[in-house]
Length: 280
Image (spheres, rainbow, N blue to C red):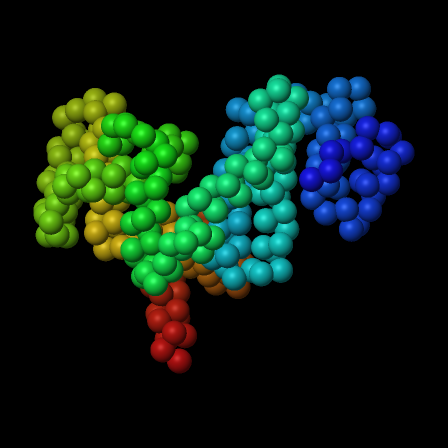
């Protein structure tokens, strides 16, 4: 990729060129981080302060896909791409690497991990077998390591729990079926009920964490993505509660002017309406 022009006039031309592509975005980022002419907010940022925005943008991409909001997805993908450019710009300033290095690294990785596409290996394999091969190549690249090494700490907790459990399962540390997982859920739930009245706040939180960890394990055994399942549950809760608000508004009231029995009845009405809508 051509470097960002040093000449201010050429840089301005690129920044305002709608057809400038990735080079344009790179020039925009360099200008935002310019030590004298840049944006004060952008100049104050570092890797740690930008990381939460990167995670947020990834979730917004997932949200647009979940809602099939294709017109929004273009913008969300652009926001996520900008995060990569932002990190690469800061790394370039620090002398670590630049955007070209990032692109080269991912390109090399994709070529090396797809010998059945870019090399001599046969592509007459199932997607499941190719996944096994992918994980084997990743393990070989990591070299000798402990079983759970390399599972990113910054992942969402439920996702990381599933990844940790998958790693442990590879070496046989796993329940053979969902029956044992369900039994463990019953056990952890009982411990949480006991902890609620007899243990400290920290110990209650620990027991609750244990229960969530086992729930993530159940999701793995059921081949359910717990993050996606919880996002869907959040969306369903939002949708139904907003129906409650709408019905109360027809009567000139807000939820605060209602009570639990009435709102619970309206909740059940929303459930019935959704069920009838799906059947219709």
